[in-house]
Image (cartoon, rainbow, N blue to C red; front, side):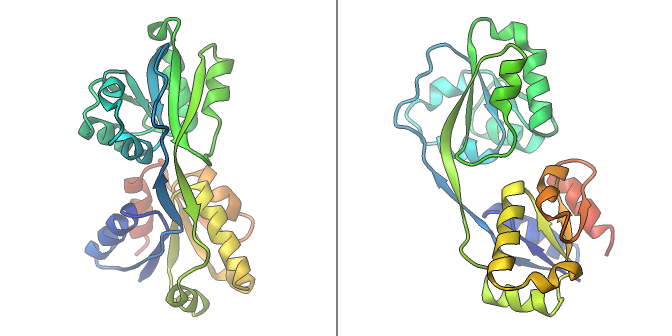
Length: 238
């Protein structure tokens, strides 16, 4: 069986390699390109903690001049993979929500007393799913979003991938974010491939990632919003 992995690099290759190690074929077509864009100086006055919803944010700040100050702050992450990235980057006090952006908001609010009069700094992408800032504000915790990277959408699908899609050579397409799903849908339309929608099976990491495609294609969603759960779903059907 052959699968198409659409997440950004280097994660795209890692996921594809895991599929190959399980004895299946996998093609890589990263639909979003990571570009760090943190401000030269970050105002940390009044910051009580960091909220991190992606390993990309950790990577974007890894060479920042204020990294040591950032490392000394408590960190709340959306999931275990992001928490691991924080640990590897030298952050000392890290707590994982082991879920999605909603779970991250709940985790932070459960530690509301620890934050005192300070606010949560949320280093994030220019375009992002969910509204952590609004959720925290409604819960009585001040939050400031800081754009530290962007994900630029691919302009088109690789020609060999288009050909395999038309020939129905993929058992499924793996989608890891809502933005990737939106980009994939738009690229298919731009290439005039609307007619293959009904023959495509999508494996999505979350219901949020699945939503843009659910009205057009067969979509299956992982039991938990993590790579392992998604691969368990994909490989469990091989």
